Amino acid sequence: MEKPSNHSRRDFLQGRAAAQTLVDKVKSWVDTTTELLDPTPPGKQIMLAHASRRAMACEFAVQYHLSDDVPTDDILAAFDLIDDLEAQMTVYREHSQVIEINQQAANGPVVVEPGLFRLLELSAKLYRETSGAFDITSSPLSRIWGFMRREGRMPSEEEIEAARSCVGFDQVELDSSQRTIRFLRPKVEINLNSIGKGYALDEVAKHLNSYGVNNYLWHGGRSSVLARGQNRADSKQSWTLGIRHPLQPERCLAEFHLRDQALATAGGATQFFEHEGRRYSHIFDPRTGWPAERVFTATVVAPTAAEADALATAFFVMDAKEVGEYCSKHPKIGAVLVAAEDGADEVTVRAYGLNEGDWTNVDEKLRLE
Image (spheres, rainbow, N blue to C red):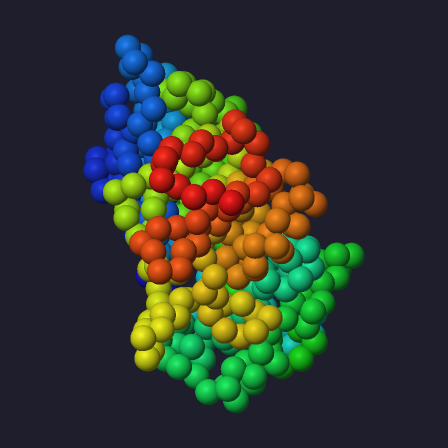
């Protein structure tokens, strides 16, 4: 993972991580998954401030109303918090608490910082609820498929089976009374890439709320989004984002209207390799050891960014029936799966658990199921 830049307060205010006031238009997030739309009501000019900093190998950014007079120090402290959380969770540096866990937990219980322990408990809960589709112990699979070094390769069946023997959160023991973690066999390891950005956004929200800052939109790497309060620049008083067509990125398929919600999108378009005419993405089904292939993208709306992050990854590998059943059991969770249609340059969109006001279909050609 690339080490984030260390911005001083002067750097932040003078340019390299500078806050930018945007008038009339909200900066777009342009990729093949989500983008922030420009829904400013006619005749109404709302000024938004934008600030960003690189962390966790992506750009973290925030938008908020200039009229709210949010102190710059509060925004700077939020970015500093993200840096601190990366230092705690990373597996790409020499030292972190997660690295310490991976090195020591097979030998005995390791005491974990309270916030990180709560995240591990949430990971265990989601592992159980998704029947293993979300699993923070799947690094051995990423390694044998070459994605840890971004050099995709085709492993043998023997390698896959050997890696699978070290995968599964059921091989991890959490003791809430002692706040410890222990691995039940050697070579087990944890990696929080699939939930860490969302967790960082949730912690930032706690920080800002403690200072009375309640209306804002954060994103981490465009794929993890947290909306709080109202967007007064939006005709629906929400933070509106669009999901694009994965094959025709000039087309917007649908809009999401976030109100005190989080959104995350998982997809295999950015990290993959091809072998004998077949594409293999970096997102694995931990239950089989093979990269997932069913959908282009899985987008989840949830109360917290950590839940949205984790469930987007899980839903990417689960089948449509499993996703529908999960959403029916969890009323606050909504999802949109974008899948390929056989023999056509079109897609099928399946929506689950979303209320009428949560999203809008904006593409007349879109096939909904």
